[in-house]
Image 1 (cartoon, one colour):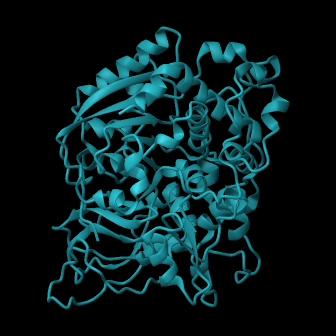
Image 2: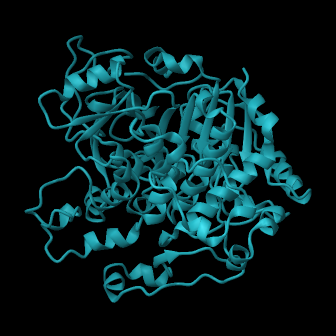
Length: 555
């Protein structure tokens, strides 16, 4: 039961338990959020790292929101699937990307699964089921006779789209380290005699941290605390000891023990659980990989606050949470889980909690950069790392609280980062910028501070060279306006906000908004998923160059 962490602090147990990580370079990948757009772009980043034979050197990969839909199957990919096939091989380059080539995705690849995904359309099918007690209906609170299932509508759809193609969508499963480790043995022993299976981390890969969020009960407005799902342990790695009703967070527990009522009284008479203590708990249900990946990107749950009934009615996740700091806390109860974006849309903080000193941070965005810094601060939550966020996650959220919870870098360094990205653009290259930053202490995100981190920021802007090298048929698509498909009256009746917000439950194709495609569409076409990956791969490849990429992994 590790406490809140920092360099060589509470998360040192991961290196001790999983000795393979000690031989890796001290490099982490932080996969920024942004729905299926971001997930597709991250595939391109991994293609480049595989091409340069450095993917095997990565120690940690953390993911936020939609990027988790890519990381989860990559990290736990069964040995029957090849990594190169999963990633669709090396990038093809702009000149090869005709529409037929973009459409022809490899069987067994993540991009193939993404191109086949129907996302919101499948979610609506579950919500519109004529018979509420059909096996496919996961919005269980709408019918008293429905059993309480592990995955409700949202996570069921995410599992079907992004995990089932790789045999990872089981609702009755838990995460663990690779076969042969103590973690896997303990999980297998705990599951013995049940129908629950153990999904082992794939050997030879990095250690994944899938981030999510939980509402902060002590905040006067909408605010969230971080949650981490990892193969070895899950939980809230920060502690709010003064929360209304009692402490919140303060540690993590082995993954197969997550989602349980507290362990009750201690034989020692203590009400807190200390680092390394063994406890006996009974999970409400075992948390599968699908719940972790889906929850991380469940953006709509943020507006539902901590109203567990509302979240369940909307097909969202709720779990039992308790604080290791006080097993008697009134906050030890059923809680909603939410998208991780408000805690850190870049996924960098999870790496800083582990004292990582080198990070590659590709992040998605809704717009291109201009000479006005508000093109960054006004359209992203990333500036909260510098205490300069100006966009609230919800209408009732506090921008000040978000900056308080996330700030770990000097505010002035955001100007340096922005200027660095823009200067690369003016030179005609991709917006990729390497920056060394002092890390400040921040208890609200569990970062101890006191060291320097080098970050390579990778922005998704489309370079003129990449655009010019595209074949005519693909280049033509980049000039066409978005085509919004029909939305049924059923959708409008169920979700009136869909009409007012112009949400399109139809396929998003390549168009003039690329690569800043809206994520409030039902699903992306195979061509769009593929082109997003190729464009981001080009930015990393050209922005760093082969020599710098390989040197970055030398300790």
